[in-house]
Amino acid sequence: MKLILQNRLRIWIFLFTGLLASALTLHKFYVSKTIIEFNARTQLFEITTKIFTDDLDKTLSSISGKEIRLGTPQEHANTNAYLEEYMRQHFVLEIDGVKTDWRWVGKETENDLTFCYMEIYRTPVFSSLKVHNDLLISEFPEQQNIVDLSLSGSTQTLVFFKDRMTQIFQR
Image: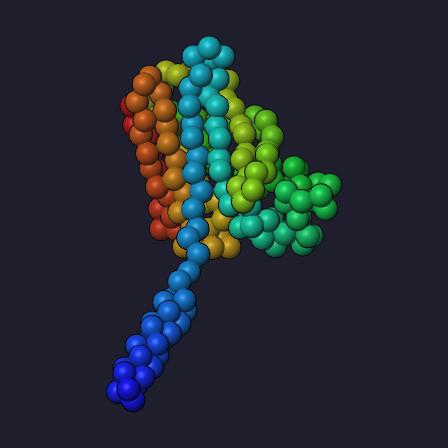
């Protein structure tokens, strides 16, 4: 009986140690997803960026020096302006060598994600789309930003990170 109790104790110690070690090595995954899609009906490029709300809130609060409280009833009154300015600085598009300004449409916060909406009035005819995307990288160096370009029934994907913040979609 004593041997059985000792073996069970060893198993519990092993399991507890394993759980503790795995908990200490777990870390949060930092990622955003942007979809750039041409809408043939409206003749617009519609851009949607999904970002984890807590990461975006921390970044905007750090930059503005104010508590943003994104997606809460106490959200700062100037959040939309701070967010739009942040997106303009950190998500830049250039089509065929010409910087292209997108129009800010707005944002929505659902659960743990914030959706940012933008659009570009432009025909879908171009050779290259250069994207600079360093969203959240200054605050979270492990951040990865995925960008999909959907056009004419096909989708291309690029992944941006701290050592690769500017890339080009070729057509």
